[in-house]
Image 1 (cartoon, chains in turn yellow, blue):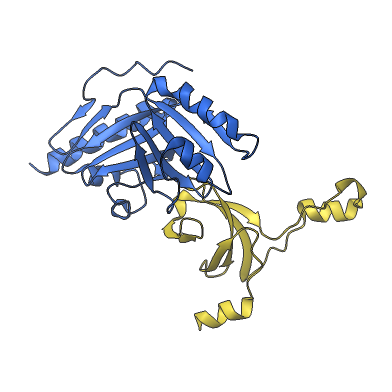
Image 2: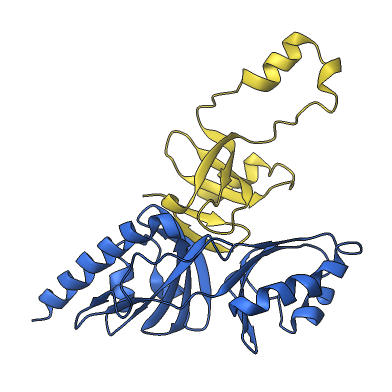
Amino acid sequence: MLLIHCPYCNETLPEVEFAYAGEAHIARPVNPSEVSDADWEAFLFLRDNVKGPHYERWRHLHGCGRFFNAVRDTVSDKFLTTYEAGAPRPDLASLTERLK
Amino acid sequence: MNAPISSFASGPLVETSAARVSQSAPCGRLSLRARGDLAPFEAVLGLSLGGPIGARATAGETESIRLGPDEWMLHCPVEAVAGLEAALAPLYGSHPHSLVDVSGRETSFVIEGPRASELLTMGCPRDIETILPGSGRRTVFDGVTVILWRDAADRFRMDLWHSFAPHLLHLLETGSRELAAESL
């Protein structure tokens, strides 16, 4: 079982308390009716499907209920970091440096 | 408000040498969501809403627990619900918030006994010992979201939705019989 650090509760808790919620940092267009079909399709459906460090959203469903962001390596399934929703994307180089 | 469930017999629902489970008396439950300046809410309720997630406060017969950064659960006597709602209503204009009466949604089990915390590990994946006596947490128990209030080292209250109560009671019953058999 994965142990996930919730940045709001500031505790490292079992994965069962959390729900995965897709890729992070995908901004909804401010005015969808002005967006072209191709851009709208990209917003709705096209995801990076990264092999390696992946920026993704999680929700502490059975806990504080908050969405937060995480960087997880999709190969090793290790979490590099978790951070509050709305915070800027952490620098990947400094995260992978810490693992070495 | 819905009527509290009456399908359980009165008195202890499970009683073994390991743990005792009973249903607590019906109480008023209010879900409060608010953010920003909490001082006006604290002034009306007379209790502190701050502290880390899981922190509890008591003022008279009203109890609060912080469930998330902007979410609290309040317990009070059934007859005090209307009074609290009326007291917080004037704050809507200056401090937008949400106060919902969820008394009819939930019930509570009181789980106590020498092996109460061990009994909870059967359905709860988190380390129960990280919930210190006098605090609480919202967590998961056998797939169901519950609020655990730890009143003492060996005494817990578990708030859960009515429809899950028979299911969880069966697990608690099986678990405490198993623990009791083990100690023989």
